[in-house]
Image (tube, rainbow, N blue to C red; front, top):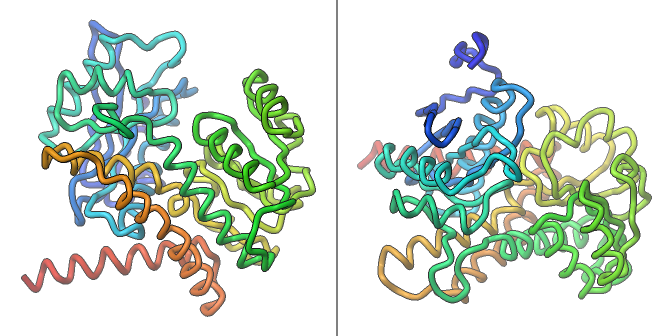
Length: 363
């Protein structure tokens, strides 16, 4: 790590994290960071991202931000989980090996269950299966019907939250002819597009992998848009489904959508960007709320496995459907208090964390 990385407690993204662990396995080439933010509500659960970070400082920043977001996501979604995240530094298409994934499993196991690992950008169900040979603290492995890849459930949660935003901002109960500009056609983004297409929405799409765009154009009737042109599309909803920090002063000035509702984590580059959106009358559906379907999915899978029972998919999807009500409550609080939806969401999550801490002290 660089010298600046070791100034951890003064790091701008450090938020009273309980544990930051750095791992290096020489034999496999693994270089990883695991961040546990808060375990007030339960063990930290969060995905493992493998990415070609430009610097180790960038990797540290990402894992700190993402792990905090997982704490808030679990709290506001009503799950008995804490927030954690892990990152592997490397190109998932070139550097990844089964040996590296098994080494990551051993790293997770060394934390004794305080962190439960799941899939994220750059990792797959097969990767989690390799990790699971070394630790029982892995979810999204695909043992049993309807288990494994959480992407379809994540996409469904975003779809539910997006519909709630459209109802609130546009007063429309259906998505027919609603124009959605989708940035990123990975597993979540493309599954979201399929749901939107089924409802009759109009789609504009972009992705770094042009073959994904071609598929959406061919199969879903989407319009292809350039990577940098997606912000300029005149549409009803801008749906960021790639990486974070893409809602910033530069892009906000270009957006022509009254709603932002997408799957990407940490969409706001800085906290004050949420207030800028409020002032511009752009309704933002907080990312960690509407993309919580994947976390809900792997939580129910994990609980079923621990109890030796089949996954109760009906109960799981009922929980995901409640995302709509949570989003509406956030919108209502933001309007009532004259604050951004991002701030309203954080306050509701912190209230739930505070209530639990108060109950623990009373006990």
